[in-house]
Length: 440
Image (cartoon, rainbow, N blue to C red; front, side):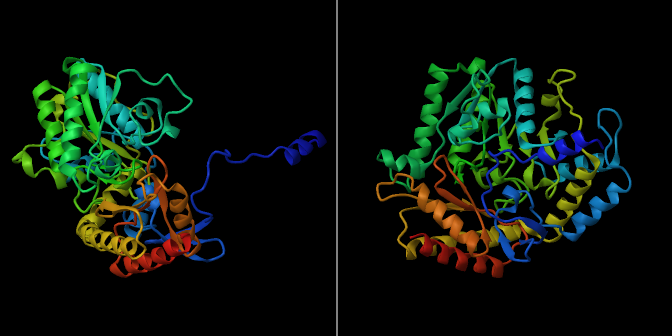
């Protein structure tokens, strides 16, 4: 190496983008189950799960073994060039847990990609251009997905013009609507408002014959952990049927047991008389326990209406990710993690409500299964972002890792791995109570 190149190496260094702000100060060295250890050996309860990704916990032995075996056999076989057994087996296994009729799948890497693929499918299959998403929904950061996202302006700001044909309709959020005179407990009134405004939207903004699809999360994720309800989702299905519109369920965060059912929307299908809710279902996050993998499922006759060459991708259906997903589905079944999510989630929500009541917190505790959150508000119902940030930071200092969400960042959410125990939930609640007290 010359003197000039040595000097260049010494003076030119690279660093992560300054926009990549950490939610916690932890430099993780290893993880196991619901715990992370930093490089100094301090243990933390990880109730972030990689934003809901490590569904079976950190480094579950069966996931590790499956990935290690696959790495030594075939790391990648691009699935429109060659086929491989882990992908075929995964299609078969997902067929066992998907709603009846969603019998055709393809795979990409992330939730954003899956969302954009579903939009492409909907537009090509219907010959229509407009997509209706719902206020507070998060569907991704790529351009098409960001165009559908209204969980916060940070996803959309400064990059316009965004994808055309996107229209936003209200989501039934009783607590938010209480600032306009509705009761925060009146889900029925919030639902009537949301569906009525959707009908008005179809009369004034996007004609039904121009509307390809509705896309909705069964529980708003980044938008504040606000569950939908049966009347709302049934209402979407009825309008989709009436107008020939497709209904896309974004189960990126709610799927694979996160809400106490295998799919989040299963909480809300009682009024359908056995009919399927979704025309298209998207899953990602918890599907492969931390490996990048997402899937789009639809009826074969709908999938066949996509145009040739419109589905694919270099890394989609990666063999190692598929092997990890197969092991994840095995663990979820064998360790009864869907049932555990329901039971531990009920304990977690009850505990969060006790903490909120003890501190007389203005705001709301809500969620479904192991998607649990506390919204911090001022006495007038306006967001108290500073209090949420103080509580989240105080929890991290005490060994409990949490994240915030909501348009104003005033919602603190808990997303533990599905393997969390009752004792770990109780430990987390004790830390949370101390953190809320310290936050003032």
